[in-house]
Amino acid sequence: MTPQTAGELAATYGTPLFVIDLDELDLEIHRFTDACLRRGIAVGYAGKAFLCAAFAEHLAATPLRLDVCSLGELVTAERGGFPAERMYFHGCGKTGDELRAVVDRRVAFDVIDNVEELEQLAGLASPDAPVDVMLRLNTGIEAHTHAFIRTGGENTKFGIALDQYAGVLTRIAALPQLRLIGLHAHIGSQITEVGPFLANLDELLAAGDRARARALPVAELICGGGIGVEEEIDDPRPLDLDALSAGLAARADGFGYRLALEPGRALVARSGTSLYRVVAVKTQGRRRFVIVDGGLTDNPRPIIYGARHLPEVMTARDLGPDEPATLVGRTCENDEMGDYALPRDLAAGDLLAMHTTGAYTYSMASNYNKFGRPTVVFVRGDHHRRVVRGESADDVTRLDVI
Image 1 (spheres, rainbow, N blue to C red):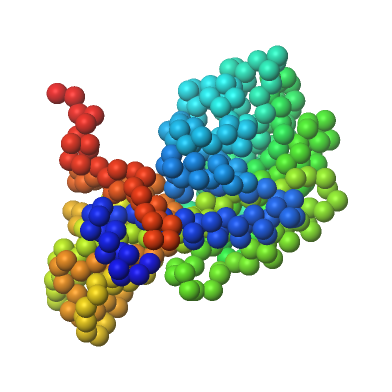
Image 2: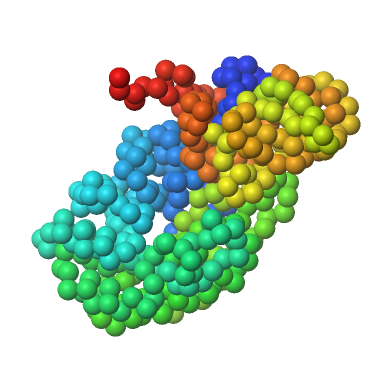
């Protein structure tokens, strides 16, 4: 994004502003589908990374599948025209309404996380119209990532432990209203090595064979996502996608299973940019703070995960040499977004762009301090359009009852 484009977008829509570059997004979609589909590996986008109706509409025109993990995500996808036969339901605590959506065939299948969910779904489904399901397993493979984004191993809430798997197979074999079509395991996020994926697949292959030995029709193994993303677009890729897909295909060769991956952040992160206006610059002791008009409410990742999104100055004027600064938001928290080198003469009104913010920023946005969530804009070439309206003060109080 050029300073001219950033300035035009900020002038048109205001800041903070969440921008998705569709050209960049399509390049990432092609990179995944090219590496995976030719090896028979399906690709499903993890909707929790970012989803709005217009985004679902865009994905519907691609070969991607879509996983949703709430009724809200499902309705959003439906409003975007995403086909039910390419969607599936995730989540470790599904409500009755969400399980009824599965039974009503609003998605192709459900990924069951625990025994309680299995029993609830069985109570809603009918033997006359069996529901397709997968089991989410906790294979015990731990990705060496931040504890909050680790989803495998004994210290996480996700999936069915392998020592409970035999009992779950026995139970599901006795339920004609459920048809076990596959297994799933996700081990974490920001994974930068192929090895953990292969170890996870080994466990899934063994588990699949155990299910088949009981005449359960397991045909697909979903190997999760969590593929590492670089901080800046020009940085080297932290994980070789072609090596990953080739390694998975080779490992599963001869077993007779279809494979799938479900990247979320790795598909959308690079295409997203957050635009902010500087509202104040101040010095406290030895620290210089650059305060912007966003922060924790539209991008909680830095304060939750220690994530970094390098800022770029989009103001077209000479701002002098860079000096150390702490970029912070305007909430009533110490919402530090990172220590960076920023121009010495940066001042209120200057425009900043934070890159690779496409995932887990807008989707995790909140109304803390009663701030409104930002406008979302799609950009393609020189054209742009608003796809989500920014929230006003009236919007953030619309649910109050007095």
